[in-house]
Image 1 (cartoon, helix red, strand yellow):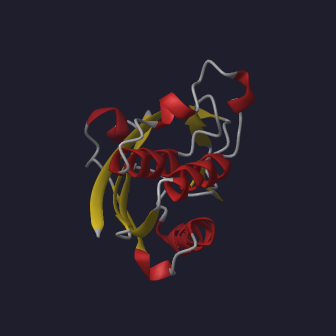
Image 2 (image 1 turned 180 degrees about the horizontal axis):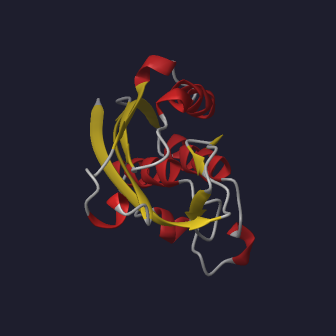
Image 3 (image 1 turned 45 degrees about the vertical axis):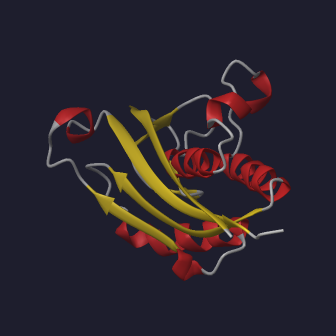
Length: 161
């Protein structure tokens, strides 16, 4: 059996009046993430981790911001497409461990919904998707509430032929 680990990272600026989507869930806040797509920092980090684990490059390779067809796209669609790429290669996802770093708002009350949303897309049990939230202790651009980051680690496997 071929077992692989992947790591992903993403960052987006926060601006007043923007929608804020994390893990496919709308977050109530005066600021939101800015990006070419819906700027879902968590899904982008998970996509990069999955692509990296399968040695399929990165999210920008598959969904470039120079391609207008991805403008404002729901990142859940991107994740679904990434899963399709892994499936074609014979991989299945074992689990996801992720961390979202932001000062505000507190997202603890949204994590169950995020896990359920991601589990549905990834066809996994909810307990195989870990989402943690932390702050940067008011340091740096995250601490000044200028941005949000996410980190993801995934384990994938390919059955032996």
